[in-house]
Image (cartoon, one colour):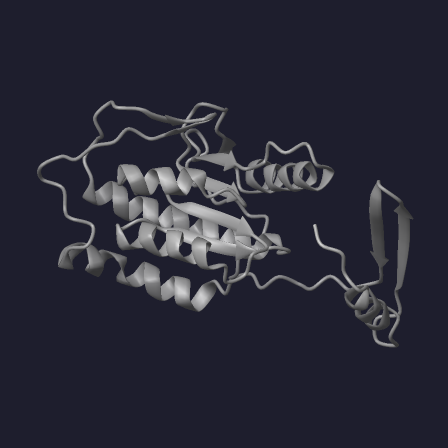
Length: 237
């Protein structure tokens, strides 16, 4: 945590109290404990277009066998981290009908919070079958960008979402992850059983079968073309 000047809060306060918003900002603060800020204003509910999905609509078409999501980097007991985990779990389970993979069990998709270790291990093992969503406040941080680029160079899929952010961007990133999974599973046969463990998280079995389409081959790049175009148009991190 870094000490700020308070300028950002002053800007927020001026916007919230402006004539068009007519809201208020309440602040509670205690030394060595923390600060709580509450922003209150009235807003009209926007009618959803019947053709466009709501942000809370399910992302799992097969409710009997929903995809599982591994949450990495949420073990810090800090109140903010645990609140983030609670909100994400609500989105993932209640809204989008995913299941949260238990500790020590691999998920179909990995959502990592400020923790590159699992992504780095996947690169070391050349295991790119699980797509990643990486949550961070480090916009443009060199080591992060290098790691993500290396994972994608191997044929993996990773989306960076900068905090703070809402459920709409997370939903878009997860849609891309689901699409990446479909492409990967169409081009890869069933894996052999070799489990790689990293702390409380287990990566999926590693496999190097003989007849698999190479991830950086012409055929595989052709399969990924629609996904990359969608990512460019829909997700702005």
